[in-house]
Each structure stands twice: as C-alpha cells, then as structure tokens.
Amino acid sequence: MKTRWLLVAGMMCGSQAWACGELTTADAWVRLAPPGAAVMAGYLTLSNSSEQSVLVQGASSADFDKAELHSMSMDGGVMQMRKLELIEVKVGQEIKLAPGGNHLMLIGPKRSFKAGDQIDVALNLCEDEQQLVKFTVRESAP
Ligand SMILES: [Cu+2]
Image (cartoon, rainbow, N blue to C red; front, side, top):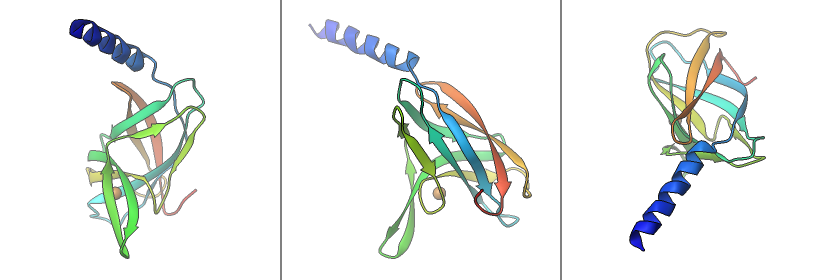
C-alpha cells in the first residue's frame, strides 16, 4: 500500500512539472538607482493566458549577484520587505509587481546603469523552466 502511494505521488509530480503554463510579461522596468546603490527594484506585469498555473520560484541576472522576489507592506508605519518563496500566477490571472508592493529585488549590481539600459532577468518557473525577460532601466514607471 505504501509503495503504491509513493508511485502515485511520483507520477503526479512528474505531470505537474511537465504541465507548466506560460507567462506573458509586460512593462518590465527597473528603477534607476543612485551610483553605488546595493540594490535595485524591478517591476513587471505577469499574466497567464495558458491552460496551467505557473509558479515563479525566483529569478537570476548576470548583472547582479542575486535576485529575489519580495513583498512590501506597512507594519506600524515602517516599510517592511520580505522574501517570497514563490508567486503563483493562476490561469487567467494577472499579477502586477509595482512600487509599494511586490517587486523583484536585484541585489549586488555588477555594473553601473543609466536610464534606457536593458537588464536581462531569467525568471525561474515551475520545476526547472526559465523565461528570459528584458527589463528597461527607467527613472519612473512606464
Ligand atoms: Cu525588496
């Protein structure tokens, strides 16, 4: 009995990994930061018009030491940021990462940026898929 359950669980995991949906991204931008800033914040709109939900499990960029998904909230008048392990984009759902809310935290820039520069970011989706998104460096939201 126990063996059979393990087998079923294994098959379900397998089909889930295979059935990762696709994301459409829009308005991907990174806020221009003063020279020497340790972090930069990226924003974009994620929408899922596929047949399967999509888990965004983090991100990476060759231009930064690391990238994390963060939430932002007011806690007793103090702005708090927390690392999110994942963001789920359900079928038909649109999720905006925007100033004051969820964002992509780009940590440890490896070069300097000016407005108009492009930053390539790979979003880690589902088990082991990646989607490349081009962010534009801007002084304010598009
Ligand atoms: Cu952050």
